[in-house]
Length: 298
Image (cartoon, rainbow, N blue to C red; front, top):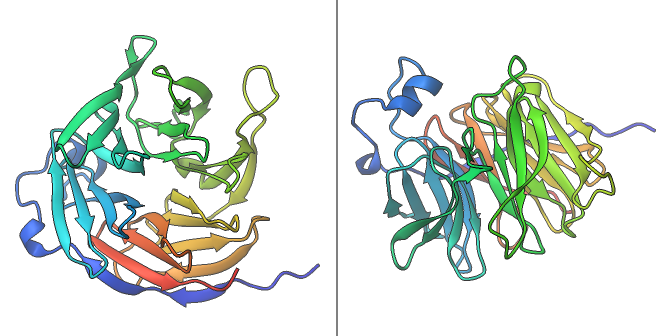
C-alpha cells in the first residue's frame, strides 16, 4: 500500500501577546534552568477553550493565566506564585492546573483563587508536573517529567480518578513525559515522550496487573520532540513539535495527514482543536504567538 505524503500547510497568525503584558523583570530560576543566558517575556503553554469560545492558556515561568476572546484580545485572568504548565477545564467552570512547582491545582476564575488538589505522592513531592488532560469519564491524567531525559529516564504518568484524592502511578521510567491526550471514547492514551522524540500509546484500562503494555505509536525526527497533544472527535491526533516550528496532524491509524508550519518562532509548545472541530490553534512560545489553521476534512 502506498501512502500519500502529508499536506504542507502554513498557519496564519491569530493573535500575539501584547507588549504591555511582556514580563520585563530579571530571569527567574525556571528561565535560568531551561533557557540559560536568555531573558523571556513569557513562555505560553496549555491552551483550553471554555464554553464561550474563549481560549485560556498559561505563562509558565511567571505564574500567569491568560484569557483570549474570539477577537484575539488578551486578559490577564489570574497570577500567582507558581509555574503552571497545563490546563484542563472542569465541569464546574474551574480549571485543573498542572504546576511544575506546586503539583496538581484547581483554579477558580470567578473567585480568583487557587487551591491544591494534590501536591505530592506517598509523602514525596512530584518531580515537576508537565501537562494534563481530562478524560471523557472525568479522570485527570497528568505527567511528571521534572528534568528527566534519555540519561535520566525517571519521568512518570499519573491518573487521578474522578472523586478520588490520591493519584495512581500508571507509568514510570519515561524520558520526559510531556503532553497527554485520550481518544474520543477514552479507551486509548497518547503520551508525548519528548526526549525520545516519540509518541507512545496504550490502553487506559489495561488488563495487565502492574503496568499497561506500551508501544511507540509515532516516531518523529528533528526538533526537540513532541510536546502538547490534542485529539478531535474523529480520533485525529494533533502534535506540537517542540523547537521545530511546526505541528503535525495524524489520522486515527497514526498516518500523517498534514505538516503545519508556523511562520514565526520555532518553540511550538501546544495545540488545541477549535470548539467547532474545523480548525487548530498552535502556540509558539518564542514569539508568544497563537496561530490557527483550517483543517482538511476528516
